[in-house]
Length: 523
Image (cartoon, rainbow, N blue to C red; front, side, top):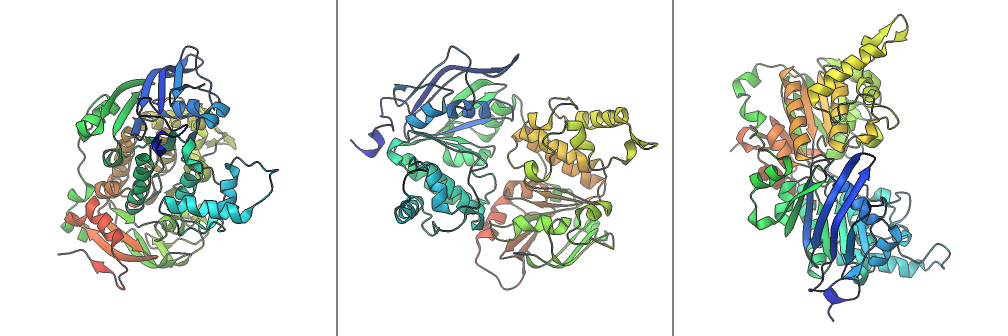
């Protein structure tokens, strides 16, 4: 018996996972409605849908976080499987890598492996063996350079993803299905392809992969088949090679997505030359960023690209005043002090961070409270907060941004990721920012919400804001930016303008070797 037919992995005759009539209701709301799904051994199967379509509910059912409604059946590798039981999922060999990775950053890599190694905390410590096992698991995925004694906090994002993936596959012969929830959410293009090579190798050995992503280009590059959910119901399961991009979008949305025109195609060079810079950055440096100079004019969008460790993930915090920095940042001629985000807001600098859950949202507060937090002054009268006025303002923005559900008093954590992001965007757009800094603005949001957020960026530029977008999504930068800078080792390596701003060119520049001086993109 070969590895693809070993115990727990499934055979060619039996699906790695089969579910029939799987449903889940929360009170009167049905989040998943009669799902039928088969995934073959060794298949990479994409699960797609807008936020709120039922994807997360399905994964939580498989993992045992939720109990299903009565009436469904399921099997793993031909054996009956109790959906809704964490113990059953573990025993059946299902493994999960969630978007937050589930790693303890203060612990070493090998100690994180031990958390899911099955030995138990009372078992004797065999650190040499554990480190060797962790090294082998990482090397099998092509990440043998990671030292198992290194603390997770010292790793870059791509390495953390590799650790979570290798940990999930410690006992490979018992993994019929690997579930990956947005594994590329914070990875730039070159590192995504490296991860994909590892996933193809895993699938080739017989493990099925359920791949959840909002990036359709990743689906076409990686998946064999795709299942689309909408409003809790399965719309279709199809072979990816038989679909076009537009057909897949229409399955996701139930409508066609209007073609967007790149912003840099609508702003001419003559117009650009007449505008004084709104944001001026001189010789800014932090832990990784090392002497960056930038200027952004009113109505323009500066895109920032770079692989993990290039400084791209640090720059937004430096410009916003959230992180200590050297150098100078000026908005309309006024100095933005470092390490003082409140003063930055007073000067018109508003920021949407990459980690909205940890750095932007008040998890115990309502949509209204989160949305109006940026500026409460319009609602104060004679020393009292006028909630009626606050609700009216919030309702107006909920309607304008199409936040769903349109319930200002609903807990913000009950909204999907895309709608939470709209709430954070509304918080700062209603302040009419001079400079809007967006760090991964559409990370983990569906294609419809992504289009809505891009529209909001354009509205901000129409109002005269200077916008900085730091993103690992090269297509997003090509769509939004009037200029793109690519960072390497903390420095600006190249600047792209006009027709040079394409997703392909941005990725190409991220992969180039180090350059000692800033290069021009002009031909």
